[in-house]
Image (cartoon, rainbow, N blue to C red; front, side, top):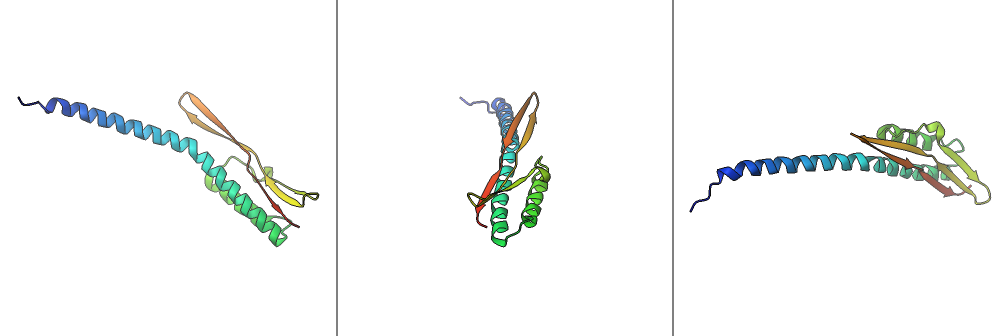
Length: 126
């Protein structure tokens, strides 16, 4: 007996289309949820690098560090005003630190996910 393959061909196409749609939706959701984490890590890494350079160069105005931070904020559309970045020196520990805090809202139909980020970096010296 021969099996009729035409009747299952349409079901295979439908299954492929549904599978592709699921993969696209999962990829989109994953990207939307993970990109703010990537942006945070990029910002915190820049803060760590910048604070070490400020300490090494003795840059009391931290101009180079702040310029790099501004570029990262702009590149990743981080909802953080550079004026809200705190740079503090602890004379007892001889530690210079830079910190900030911000929220990122990721919206989906019927749901909004809120991230809270608090990038922080410090360096000994001075």
